[in-house]
Length: 302
Image (cartoon, rainbow, N blue to C red; front, top):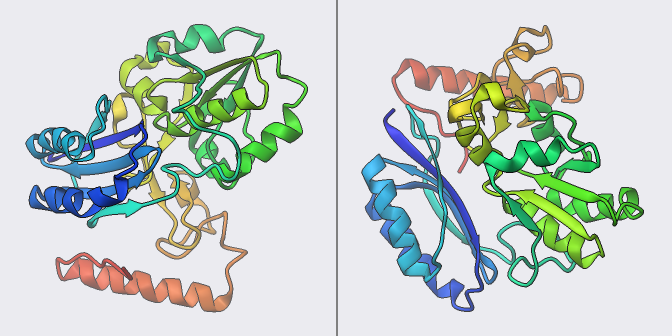
């Protein structure tokens, strides 16, 4: 494997976060690191990739530049660089839940280590909630998990208030890709009066890394926000691609569907796109194939 991928986040108040953007970007570019990092008053959130020795050094440098200690990165490997460039962005939140009281720096639910997760969710009295979006849920989830049918994390508070308001005495177990969304969701739910809120430390990625497949209650693959699209047990890249018509993940069986057209549409969007959109997507795919034939990579619009 040629490239090491590191996903990480840390809730830690940094009043000076705006002053760190340029120096952090320069340091990572100097190491030929690519990916995306969000900086906010409440902390840091990012996924980066590069040569293994440079990634290890970069994690230390990120901590030094930002002054954020205790970052616990999750690592995986891939044969090709999954990002096009390095971006460091300033945000109001490192994960957007919206205008509700939810600050893990003040209050957070109970962390559950990956090796203890099965024991918790196998309890029949536990309500297991996937805090990710529906398209992520469709790629894979834990057996018995509830899909809140959200299109963005900002919709999660409304789901809780509408569907779980009478369950505040129950044990609630939540999970997400790397742990950041369910950590913030747990803070929100505690502030809403829920009494027993648990979340998977390190998220699905840590679980797939640590728990053997034969002991796992995970079903399917885990969607990731880079060109790998999805990973499975052992954090191996799974057989998913991304539809350029709707940007949803496409499985191997989806690609056998008559409504799938590479680079153009998939079963989820084929009947929703206009003739103009389909024509535009076909032209883009033609340019991709031409670039590929010349040994180049078509990057598309910036």
